[in-house]
Length: 211
Image 1: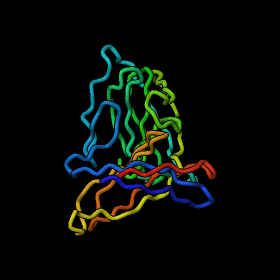
Image 2: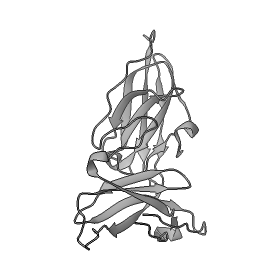
Image 3: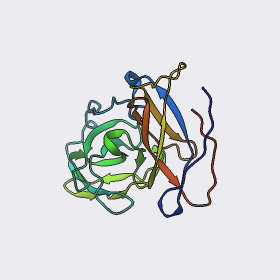
Image 4: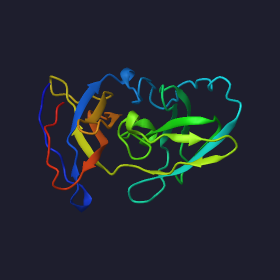
């Protein structure tokens, strides 16, 4: 049912990006990834390393929040840079650190999905689209460092009801920022949802909210 809303204001005067909401059945919950789907809480099956790539290296780094703290429990996807083929997945530790070992020499792109894949996804370094991501080059026998910082976020809250006015629990709500393309989502609890959304710079204006 179409509805309109407005963005909010976060700490320090930063404004929310006014997002677009999509409501889907829980069974359709997908962690966003380019041309690849992943069910919530699961990593997709790893693809084989490129043929003839016996020489390997390591990618290691630390992911932090916009406040400088370690970004714990953030899912990280490793993809080949040119054909978007999934290579491996990992989750950051409590301090935000992660490591990919035994990676075939070559160029890759990294995807970051906070809150076990439910937060606004982004790509290295602070990019919202896969093809804008900075490639990470792996050299045989060496460690490539790829540190990054998560986008600043605020919160979108609301309650979903049925046509008869009853709370609608167990529905999956997706928040998508029309400008950046970043998306996030979560399951409703008693029809209520609370989802992280990107902040917009103060004075950047507002856009309609579509449900």
